[in-house]
Image 1 (tube, rainbow, N blue to C red):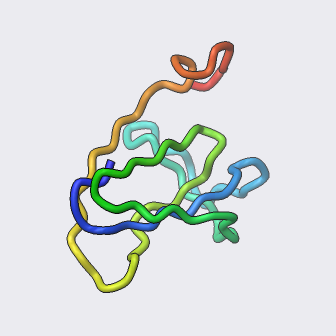
Image 2: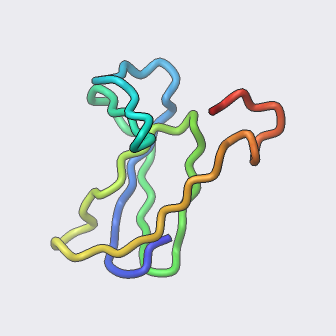
Length: 88
């Protein structure tokens, strides 16, 4: 959820993307090689976005002039939201 500033988040299906490195379990993150986004979400204060494990997403894209961004990020285990999901 965005508290202040503006941020664009690019996204694309993760299926078929090539990882640019190993998954970092301590940070719960993996980076992918450059990929064409299929969409972008513009967040302004009070808005939030939900991404699932099959959604590759790229936060931190400037929506114009550089500005400070404050946001809250909450991660929920996918198997709590998606019954039968074998996601870790």
